[in-house]
Amino acid sequence: MLDLLTVALASLLAGFVDAVVGGGGLVLVPALFSVYPSAAPATLFGTNKGGAIWGTAWATVQYARRVVLPWGALAPAAVAALLGSFAGAWTVTLIDPTGLRRALPLILLAVLLYTLAKKDMGRQHAPRFSGRREALVASAIGLLIGFYDGFFGPGTGSFFVFLFVRLLGFDFLHASASAKLLNTATNAAALTLFALKGHVWWQVAAVMAVTNVAGSLIGTRMALARGAGFVRGMFVLVVSALILKTGWDAFLR
Image 1 (cartoon, rainbow, N blue to C red):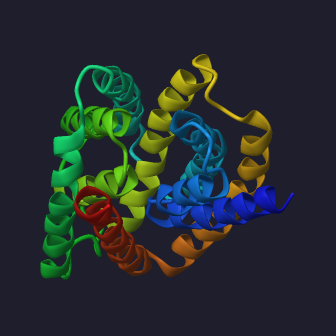
Image 2: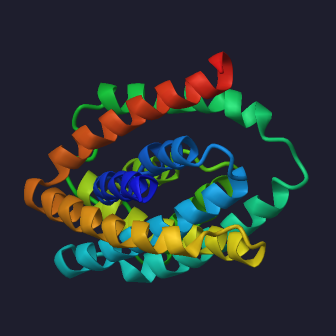
């Protein structure tokens, strides 16, 4: 019972973080590995997806009610993200991702430094494209980061947010809202693969799903109330934590 309570609370916090800017796996995955150290990693990753997808989907719905989103661009981008995630998951069965594991902290550091240097980036919502061009760019982002999520995964939500801000000209609030839809698609792809392989503890995932949605509700409301500046600050915080975590895993572990 204590184990289940621990992962439920971790899922609550993960739902909050994920709803604001992504990166909930930074909280939930280590908690699962700590509570269930003898479990197969694939089972813990699958259970994580089984719980986290609900909070991400709920956040998508909540943002859609309050933020005007370019559905004409996001719908094909979500399909591209789902297909990219399947392709990435297939590729990881053929290629060792060790090189990417070592490069990831450096990539995230570059993202952080760029964001800090561009102090006004993502504070104003000024989309650069419209219509078919916006759909093409959004789909390219979905395919690329979807592939990355299936192949490796850490920081997927943050990469979605950064590229929506940098390439499409969204503010951090609209970027985070848009990222939720694409992240739901990539999570669905990964969850399907894990479920087909029997790598999901559904009873644990069900409890985590309830608290994840609760955390998502709190995070979404806070992001909508405080706006792009708050989301930008959370983005910097989460990316900084990701740099420390992935750097430790790649070079010191």
